[in-house]
Length: 353
Image (cartoon, rainbow, N blue to C red; front, side, top):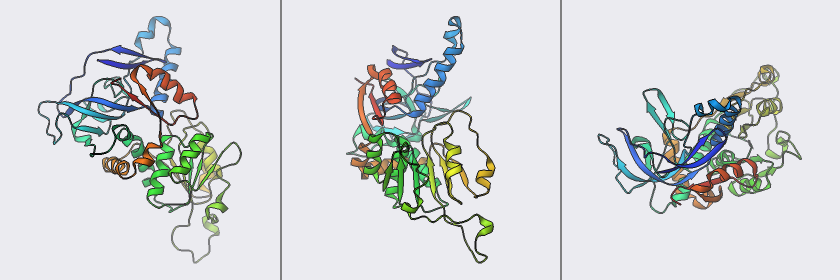
């Protein structure tokens, strides 16, 4: 089969062996596969690895077939697999699987290729049949929308207001989830005019360019009067002092520290951006204002199902995340474009073309 193979900084289309599904898995033909910020981060880390090795050791760099956001057609079901799914069904699914070495993420592991290929395997128990009428390209958005939905669901300390910093796919998914849950107001910040426009269309009440003003200085417009630190609250105060929900969806170095320094007392900070580097901040900045700092990873299976239902109910809103659809041969150029172009949000690859 043909597949996009990431090794070091390069992505090449190669002919590789067809995968064989293990018991409990489906052999599927990807229809559309999204490129994620996690894919870009993996490529960056592999490029750093390649730069650190001498030419004679370059073969030691692992090879990965990316792609963990996909819609696909079921081709075969491994023997011994119990499933209501059948060959020909159109599905999407959670890109996680168990192995003897522990859990692996499909498309982010050298041991399990993903959806940027003509064939891949996915766990039957973590697969969902796509409802009739849901376009196959939109179904491939289930995974990133699940990420945003999970982050929004974690923000349970305060009803709002909400500040979303970074309007890439994850930030936009957070905005859509909050909006559909009726949890406002929502302020969104991004350097890209195109992404700010998408944020407004998906439910953000205020959109700002952080180069021109800080998203952490607009509380009066969001209806929040910050409370004092806990020792200065009235003696008769009962319950939880109101604060803001602040979603960090950029993964940019130093952003967590900026948010901690700028958050009003009693706020809930949810970190959802891919952040593989070390971060530094002073805990006292959060202690004095009793901030909650929480990290959001992936989603739960029921949230994945809810995200698919969200797409079915609001296809027009989901479609606003897609900025281009490309053939498999354009995968490397698509990675480059997504990394460099502020106008791109979600690029889908069609591995069949």
